[in-house]
Image 1 (cartoon, rainbow, N blue to C red):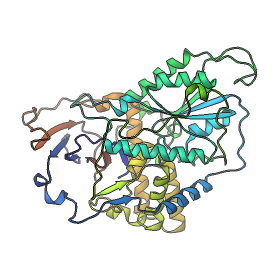
Image 2 (cartoon, rainbow, N blue to C red; image 1 turned 180 degrees about the horizontal axis):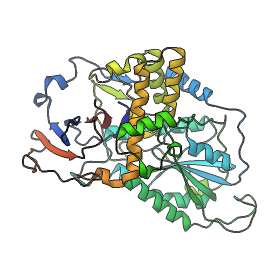
Image 3 (cartoon, rainbow, N blue to C red; image 1 turned 60 degrees about the vertical axis):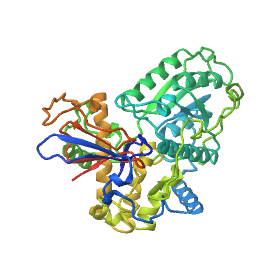
Length: 468
């Protein structure tokens, strides 16, 4: 359960599940079932009677903090020096809400005298709805998780001499204004792969082109010639770096096994980025003009609310919790050695890694997971289960690269191949609204990739896994 595509509580009062069945020779189809109350769901899908909510990870606050500090210690290099660049660099956080193995952050630190981390609370993400069916893009549960991620990111930045500037609005409006106020020469960000995020990147780039930064003493260069801030996009979402593939992404195999064998035999996973002990300072001027550091949103400020559940699992947001979960699953509970045998279970927090939400938010680096697997194999045991975690991460990489190759067509009804299938039954969905009972609809999915599993639930969102 390693890949978390999105997490939206579409109908807060509805028990939901979405299953993409493994392909045989027929096209894959997706069945979405929604049940309004517990009485209409099967007994096998109900939580065990009397089971209390389980925090994931289950470590205490002190143990979580100690685990995170140890991970940072292993990845900190006191000998790192800045590259000699001047001025200010902005780091635009999106789906990379971490400090450890954040190449955009390290590159900004190396290229400037001061660094300003920024997060934009984009209304299109937090208040937008999907094109079809009008589902909220971000439900209350996902929003709460992201809020916790931002709170933890802010704390981890503060420990290293920085802070997190939070602004509510569209990045293409906010980032040019920030760059102008602090006279930043570059905005660093991790590159995204899907159409909506790419569009925002283009709009930010266009907005920065309209900003003129006067140069002089203390500027980004020793020349007096004005400059326009630039947007520097950096790859950092996959285990295998895109530059380490043996082929351009446009030639990516349409069969997963071909891709896996190619990267396993000819490519290697880069090490996590080393961190300096301190990432500061922040800019010494311009922040007053911006109105201070701003505040992390609350559910109330986003117009959302969530009722705490007394059953099931509660995923704790943030990089510290993510590092704690890796430690808990691999080292404390020693579950990695049996992952392949238990990964398809249904009950409890430890039948699988549960890394999905942290990978999706970027609170956890896939390269860090790979490093921990290799360390575990050296110190404890190497077997099919330890390999299988990496196998699943390669699946995750594959779908990221597919989104680059095929663009938004991967979300189209006919898929990239524009396959139009003949339906064996009426295509018009029969349903009753969420307040009356159940909703069901068959979705067609392109007949590749094979052997994959897509599950949707109100707590965990969409998850894409190997279904073999």
